[in-house]
Image 1: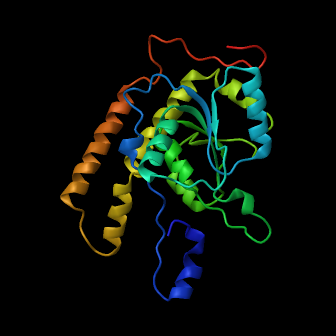
Image 2: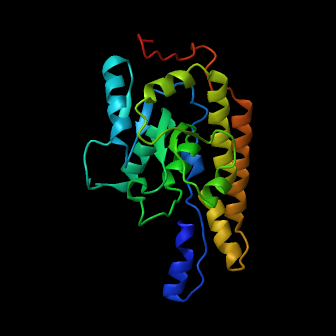
Image 3: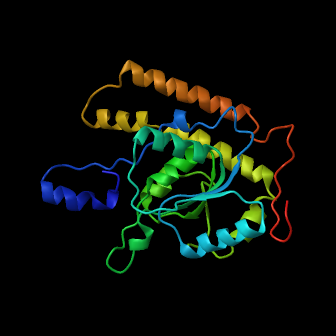
Length: 246
């Protein structure tokens, strides 16, 4: 199960052992290199969202040259899931910032105190974007995102999102470190091969040759990331100004 806080209750109902396994990601497909020089999307905000933060970003779009991608329809019918996933993956790889929040954050309250890690965290990290939001306060998040600045915590109803982005845009070295750390840790921890390996280990089976080969490929990609600079040497660093254009 992806939601560890539900293990005991489900095990009681079905009378069988339950095991926690975090979400995974196709880290190779989300790998943003070597063409990670220009992230043309400024902010990506998919799924449940804060109206306050969304409205603040809309105002920012009106004032500045900001490319902001978000959902515009509800209860969409997916015509072809591969096209949908390819589009979403390309959005993430080309986004400078991505808004992420704990799973079902708008349902959390007095009757639902459970905090869990949703898939957006794994996808955003694998795509090398900078994640802004409210991470869940739970052991699974601490264990799976144990590197510095994995998520830059901001208020859920963050009306000052413009100021936050402007401040981060003055820190190119920090941005480069975050993107590298997110990508490398995803390659070494969060690919689906590690989840399948955990399942096989639990039931006493060995890894397959294909799994061993994929893990070697993931390690090779991580080495490449560690040798690359994220900012293209021929492009000036992006600068964002709240008060008056770029």
